[in-house]
Length: 334
Image (cartoon, rainbow, N blue to C red; front, side, top):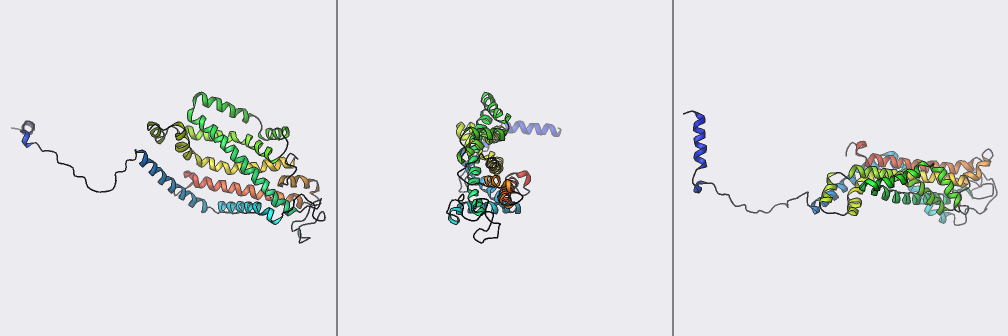
């Protein structure tokens, strides 16, 4: 008999073997060991996501502080913030008050290290107090613009459809108008003040954030972890703010640093044109006051101008550092 026939007979005989000869399944004895981590379970997935977030945050900080440009920008910005907070301590009097002889050059009088302007006002006091207005307008306008822009972009990108169409038409209406022209019109209609300028800058800055947030949400909403959250019965609010938004934050954070710099420049431009708050001193108003005396007293425009330049430069360097730290394409060790 051939080998194939013998194998066939053996298979048939094993199929008809008595039930007593069939191997019985062995009992599984539970042993103590590490807990089984089911990544599909909500608790396990949340714990794993938290661990990954902490690790990525540490790597981002490591990359950010390894960047010398980012360190310089952070250090200078901290100096500006400290100066703004301590300005009332160093110069408790009104910076618009006339305290000395007009046109004192920097270093000419020890009582006025940076000199005085055409009305005898202390230039150093004006620069220190002006930093308070610039930072207040920049940070507040950015916070308002980010809040409204993220909300609009998140709703449009997550739901899509007719909701997306309506919100994007609203964004396009604001973006069809020149930003600075719209800013001048808004401030000119209302009474010029720090609050009015802040709100006007927020109004013209939120569309950019809304489009960026919408693009990020459209790219993330079909990811596996979002689909898993939907299958677990999570509501729209939890999916938007706890699942998608944390993953869309890196480009928004980078954009926020640029928005602060842009807001400071816009406030300075408005004050230079005489549309700022007349009751406070700002870097732009100091430049506007000294522009007619550039040939005879150039320091009146150069000193506040340098303060604007270095502050905006520091914010841009921080933005570049955040981009390198939070964007994995530009980070070799992430």
